[in-house]
Image 1: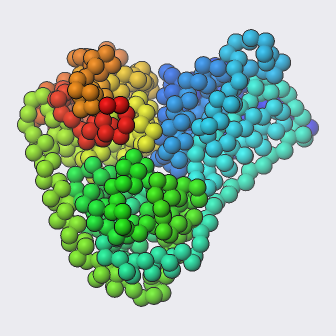
Image 2: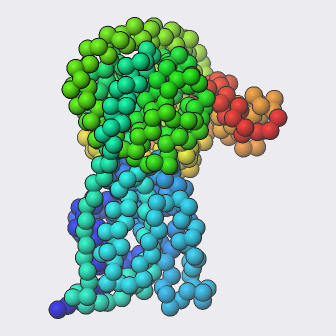
Image 3: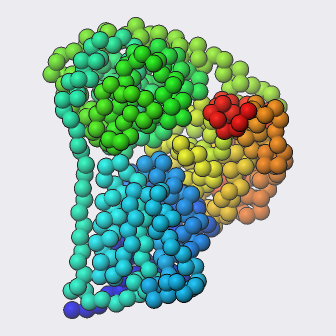
Length: 564
């Protein structure tokens, strides 16, 4: 016999699941959990804003494929975290957001930070859970972990009122459950259907997305591509699941990336989508040859067929489907046949890749002052050339430029905000990456606008001795919006598009970090060397050309963001 509090049960649930970090900002409504995590194996990583805590948890989920844990207090603590939760929902990232709230005895009494939280967050999570009895806290944590990781991963909301956390219950009345569910559903017959479609194809294209990474299907993808000799492009967290250096990998799947993607999509007759959603990145499917046959493999049935008709829908875990597919290919003995069948197409795409990169070469190698952003991203890509280097991108145009340039050798080593497009992810993502991989080099490239969102997380990194390097692509303001306005309405509206010259590197120096200003492209490489050699949290403020227009800005002007 003995007694235990709800807060202790919550802490034990995290400890028993070997959670390494809880990303958080303290508050009275979650102190009952804090006091039992203090000096435990779980590290409370405190941020300067709840949004940053949620972004760090999202990054942790992306990097580890395990739920990132964010814990916030009631009311404003809860609402401050919502952007990061929504971002995790859009990126299919496992996350658990634990929120305190006003005690049940004080509901509707106008107590401090009282609000009805669960209805607010419901549309942006997989599941909402509100635990009203202390003895059931372990069960609710078990539910949260299962919902976050089963099927299509995503964020789960767990709310526990403060008086429930403070309640004392008899240990004998506590029911602890801990079930690990691994979903590996598939339809083996669909593998044979796909082989039949491949047999009549001449110009197939494979796009490997986040589902490949989340299902841990890197080895199966590589085997499938090498068995068939088909070209593959990678997207979002699928980047690096097959190295960009592989002779059958044509790098990023974005049609705006210089290379072979756009011509491949125009001429393909068979599109095989592995764990990737048809969204803006593919102009909602309009970039693909309309006569091409489409195959979409996804763990989520309702996702299949978004924006276009899919001739072969496959509801399956990507890893298991590829295992079935590889087994079918080996059984049929058609591997060499497929390789010969598609060899001419591969040769054509290699030339298209070369031709597609040629127009960007002048900008990648530009010696102009102010610096062309593509020259900056090329220098970063060349410097961050170790297989285990991690690059994080933040900002509108800045993420576009880096996405057009970055080449990857490994998955889980490139992070950006994805389809939700939330600025401000950069410093929290980078801090999380450095925590996850303390011995690897981590570099964040960010726009000057996005740098301001969570700037004080730089102070957090300095105080906690997290030596990441931040490179600011400083075009004096909100470049993507500025240029899209110029394209669409003929001029930029100064309010909201212009910031001006700010010595961000001096701000970082004032906080105790290392800072450099770069105004000539020849200074970029030496500045990167010096920043990493400093062993400090470092900021390189690079003055880039504010007149350059990215493909992202052009796309924003054309997709209905503004009325003519």
